[in-house]
Image (cartoon, rainbow, N blue to C red; front, side):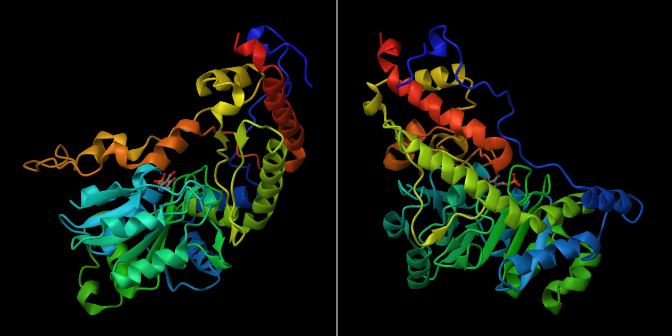
Length: 422
Ligand SMILES: Cc1ncc(COP(=O)(O)O)c(C=O)c1O
């Protein structure tokens, strides 16, 4: 029983270790800094598949158990997604199905190609697309199922691949949260027709800004390459003569990664196992500790998956177990104790103007259609309402004591709730 007065009511904060509590990305070592320094005078804009860009892409294919043939890097995950949808041939009025609660750019490039996004509710446990709901939305226009392995937990790939096969649909895996996650032993990113990985700074394999697209399909590789890379890269890499004639111009955009970002990504990839081990140790320990807290629903991980990068730690609040205290009030009380806690920032997509209507403002003469209705997503709404966001602790030696104090702070609220509810 922790009897000290709650900090929100004027007591001493329980957490006495100062911030920041989330420290990511980790600092570069000397090798990485030396390589960045040397690259400055070698080439600051690589046009082909050479130098650190080639090294990164080759290492990435190796990271995916050498199960994938083609890899092409981009200047962001969003660019890689645009290239993926373009590569798979999304065109006007085609439909792409994806999860209702995720990062908006997993699906928004579809609008750029004048396709439509059909949002599907999420599974309460995995927080990925709810497989049981997918078939309800399939029609003649459906082309792609987009799977986001949310917070590192793989989606139910056996069922998704079966549905895709039965209905001749393509599958795009967005592995931005799930670098190195496995479903029944198989790497995320090796199931679908195309997979992308954001390498933005908060991701486990980080470039700062960057993205990777992988596929076993030569046509998709050619189209993705031509969309974002012209001259050297397209000339050398696009072998099919039909596509290769575009090598001078590509399909018009320049979305390539900078060599500096590729070096950073390469080093973070080389440190992946170390970072993963450290993060899993911290987050499993925190998750175990939270089992003592009645009003918190732990992070669920299916027994046949490996969470890999485990991007984000978002347990759920059970209001009824804390005398119906509002989530905002709970967050305020925990913050007063010194905890770095918030409500997750991502909005339900169906509530965003971009997703609510098929966007008319993006293009002239396009009529808005109402496709995604907020009341169709009970699980996404419930998760959004109840989720808490804690630091993704990743350094056991530094973070263990902070985690212990976090668990005690949750307990302190539990033990003293009667004072808050007064
Ligand atoms: C699931 C998901 N997809 C795509 C992206 C976009 O990646 P980027 O920020 O590299 O453009 C993100 C970024 O956080 C993401 O979380």
